[in-house]
Image (cartoon, rainbow, N blue to C red; front, side):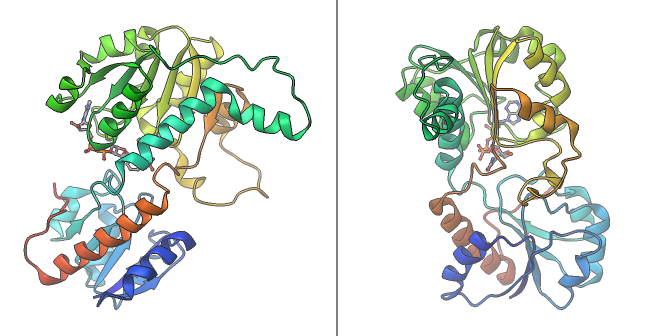
Amino acid sequence: MKVAFFNTKPYEQRSFEEYLTDSKHEFTFFEPNLNMDTVPLAEGFDGICTFVNDHLTAKILKRLSDCGIQKIALRCAGFNQVDLEAAKKEGFKICRVPAYSPEAVAEHAFALILTLSRKTHKAYNRVRENNFSLKGMTGFNLYQKTVGVIGTGSIGRAFIRIALGFGCKVLAYDLYPNEEMKKLGVSYLPLGKVLQQSQILSLHCPLTEDTKHLINKSSIQKMHDGVMIINTSRGALIDTKAVIKGLKSEKIGFLGIDVYEQEENLFFQNLSEEILQDEQISRLMTFPNVLITGHQAFLTHEALSEISRVTLLNLDQLEAGGTLDNEVKA
Ligand code: NAI
């Protein structure tokens, strides 16, 4: 299959090229993301491969369909960027990579937690300036802390296993509680109770109409004073304005985010020579107890290999026209 690969980053291209040597598919790597201006690049191809910030809106899907494209391989797990109803109407076949490395994301969530709890980001800078003072460096133990996990799918479960290893008490909320987690000692409680009782809250549910702004003014009010909120899932799970207020009032003690509601115009690019126009992320960056990473939780060698391997298998199945193991549909 001739595949137009949108939104190419060098690390992805390297990983896919390793796998392409044994594959019959032919890739053309395009740097721009997929939008109304770049959609004509797909002309003459049999399918496209896109990432989280390539919005497959009804308009774009229509244009792709006009270009003769019917097959899409998402090289990510989340699919909230796809208008599934429009895709169905236009007859698209879409696959995703459901779980390329849950541990990569779960471990990154803990990197955020440990950096915030032990201030290693400050220590790194201080020590480089020969400042060995420990003033302001007091942290807290994870041992015996209560950790609340919202969403116990593959990433939430990997996160819980690590939390249990630290000796944390784990509370969880999911529409479908998991028996294996219960056996490990996890207590499933209603959302309000998890918010109320957790000293650390980590979000691992998908972004849906129900979960949009799950962290908002009223849910923050219910939380433990000084709570640590970690979001490696999707930016819009958090109402940023409400979180800024919570940080200012010190209701929220720490915030670690790998995703941000308005990340689309910021993340995955080097903007170091530009003036940031986004007031909210600029405000977040002024807090000493906020840590932001740019949607890199997935980015490990192991995860990239798995994304390449599964995407090529998905393309094999899309080309064969039979059953699709990783199909995404309305
Ligand atoms: P998954 O599909 O295995 O698990 C999601 C869990 O959330 C399921 O158990 C589901 O029942 C639960 N859920 C759904 N709606 C809910 C609701 N309203 N309230 C509570 N729980 C609900 O997904 P997985 O692989 O664990 O990924 C979770 C999320 O992580 C993805 O949706 C994606 O947004 C994000 N992600 C972020 C990455 C990053 O690099 N930062 C990389 C990969 C995924």
